[in-house]
Each structure stands twice: as C-alpha cells, then as structure tokens.
Image (cartoon, rainbow, N blue to C red; front, side):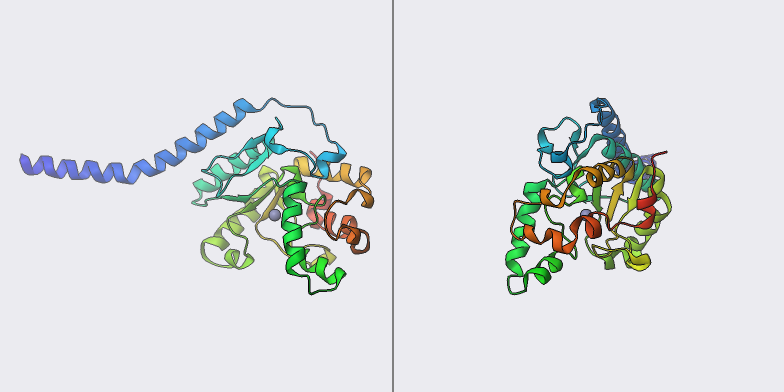
Length: 259
Ligand SMILES: [Zn+2]
C-alpha cells in the first residue's frame, strides 16, 4: 500500500511538472489579450505631421500601450491595435511551438536622434555622404523611421544569420507563411527587384493596416525640409531619404491596400 502511494505521488509530481508551465504560458497570453482588448478605446485615427515625424510622447498617448514582459525583452510600447494583432499572431505561433519576442517597438524622434548621433560620431572618419550611408545600412535618420509609428516590431534577433538555420529558420518560415494573415509584413526584404534603402532585415515586421495609411499621409504631407534637428540632417535631401529609404520597402508592402 505504502509502495503504491509512493508510485502515485511520483506520477502526480511528473504530471504537474509536464503540464504546469504550458498552462501558465497559455493563461498569461489569454489574460494579456483580454486586458489589452479592455484598454482599447478605438480612438479616431488622427494623423498629424508631428506624429509621422516621431515628434510626440508615446508613453502618454492613449493610443499606445506598454507590451507585457511575456512578449518583450525590454520596455516596449506599441499602438494598441498593433499589439492586439501581435498577441493573436504570437498565440497562433506558440501553438506551432514558435515563440515571438519583441526586441524593439516604438522609438520616437528624440530616441532615434540619440542612436543616430552616436553612430554619426562613431563614423566621423568618413566623408559626409558615406558617413550617413554607413549609418543608413540599418539605422534611420530621425523623422524617417517606421518605428516612430508604433506599427513596426523587431522580432527575436537583430542578426539575419539567426534566421538562416535551426529555430531561427523555423521562426522565419512560420512568419513568411502566416504573418500576413495577422497584418504583419516584412518590409525590408532582399534588394532584388530594385528595392532601395535599408539592407535586408528578417527581424523587422510592419503592421500594414495602419502603417500603409501613415506612409500615405507621410508622402502627401511631409517635405524634405521637415527632416531636421540632428547632426547631418542637411544630407537628407542629397541622399533621397524620403524616396529611397522611407519608401524603400518591398513590392508587396507598396501594393498593400486596406481590405
Ligand atoms: Zn526595425
């Protein structure tokens, strides 16, 4: 009898070991999704010049929300609608054993200026145009980044090589097959088909139901002279920042229309 109860206890421990972590993750995802839905107030889409140029404080903006640490590696903020779509995508991915973690989300003008000017100093040995273009391989000029809008996320790793094999490749293949269903598109694809601008970024995914509207507004309202207020900003015109970089996105993303 004593032996039997020991065996029974052992089975019980094993059972709880196997099921508990999964249950915890599932509950957390569900809770976060419900919580986010509650906070969405469906604000009217008011797009302004300052907004698309990144000159606003997303931390005090009611259309932005802080991402749960379950889904991020540091403090990340996203537009409400984008986060909700991300939660659905992350939940679906998890069912296929894929974990999606946000490394970076919204960055405003002032944060981008810090990144840009740090790199501007780093490459001070180069001539002005080369100096800016070196930074522009992967980083944006302030006021020209999609990360200003709260619609774009960097996922899992900032190295393309991570997505070339093993779990990274599995994750990338899942995103290629399913992310579009949730509104997310890879915008910085390889440079075949004459895509201009930033290098290939397998980690950068953009929520086009909103981002496509912001880009349209940007293209009709923003002038090259609006890109100012940081070291080297005078080069924006020569480098064709708006045409080659802001609009240097994949063909699929360019063709995207709201259904
Ligand atoms: Zn990015």
